Length: 188
Image 1: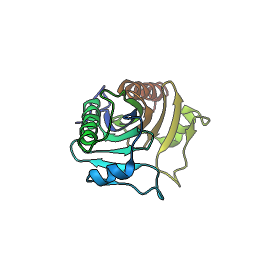
Image 2: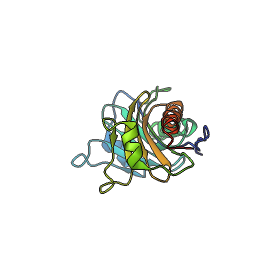
Image 3: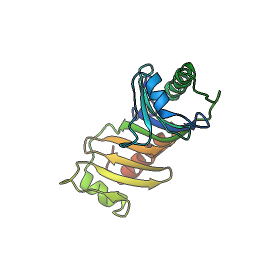
Image 4: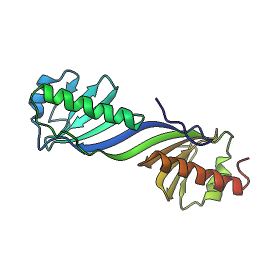
């Protein structure tokens, strides 16, 4: 279930997290033991395992590292890690009991609730922090340093926030953007 926050109808769309599950894996053995897994060393050095419940994906590497993707909140991420650990134990893999999971990236969406003139916004936010070429992409790309995220802003007022490691960072980024737009008279 998505997370809702602030006045911006903020939703987490995807969490990418990494962890060390083991000292090392035999990926061929895991592929044989786990349904919904794919491994071909010639195309990618990791095994892709699609977890059905919760619906997420994990990349497993020979080093024992794992990258989880597809969670929309922290409970779902935790459930996915537990499910993968259980599945790996069931096929005889040695795994750590309580691996520390670190969020690498969180992608969220929000809605400013009003249309935004992107041409004026590009100038207002500063051309050194903005990429806006409507012939190539309909959104404005805005890079900020605090928090260090990238915001895609569309004329409809809808936005995508990438690069946050916590939902609070995404919320703060939206608040900061809205404040800048309001102070320039570009947002009610």
